Image (cartoon, rainbow, N blue to C red; front, top):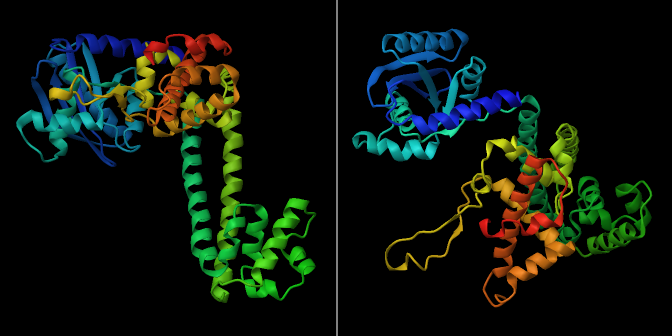
Length: 430
């Protein structure tokens, strides 16, 4: 699969160079939908060959597209074909993979590019499926297209599990917030300071009502919420909760509230167990990649950060330089340079890439700059002389996060362990 993707990448780079004004390319622009797709056939010189062809999102529909493509290719004496599509949810993936498996060149056109180019075609602002396929073909004829990444099964599984983990984390956070702000804030506000531990969840699940706790002896309360063995810290926390319940200002707890508390705490436990299962599976998949062990050697990189970096980069050979890697993550610098302030504009990171990856790398930068000698020195040297500048600590950690991404990409490409020398290589480019 890696060899096939390498060939596809070379073909894509070649097409980007030669597509403008080419007289031998048939360009097929595809507007993707859930059930029916629309195709536009044209040339790189702007000639329309066929438009308004609809085909179903089925095997017969795909065959219809290929038959029409072959017919136009022969009729007009064109030797090469480029299929281009705009990513639409997950609806484009079956067609894209089918074409790639058939040996066809497939490229992507970004949603932002199609939106901006739509007005330039004929001065229109409305959206129309038939014209959108022509819009896609027009962008490809200008070379404004992206490589269609078709990863192997393991990498695809890793990306899918990371996406699932993100959704589960949001669900976990939503449950925690609702328990804290909906239940505790109304019925037992004194326990909010203890929220977060397993012991506090047991209290919420089994006896949220402070008046019920106040009627219990301490030993009975402990047996109810912590039937097993507890350590000194847990005993101290239970004592504080038991005493606070005797003077609680919370509202009276009805039967419905108790049921809601039991359901929500049980749901939170289930989500956390599911997250643990997903994390274990993610680690199993990551261990199949030889690059994963090298990523774990980078200071600040744990299993979570390493898996996200591995998933985002995938095949390191698809990037020709570090600038492309930074752009993928949104760490590339940009500024609004216009008028009198054009020379004094301060560049900032674009934030147009993968936000989850940026966040993970920033956390890694914080950990490494606080706990590892070489990184502490690097971070200190960057701040030296600029200590009074507002927000300089955050800016330099963002710079360090970008540096960590470049280091990770380099180690994946060279398949070698981390060494402190990488911290100072190419520093002016990050």
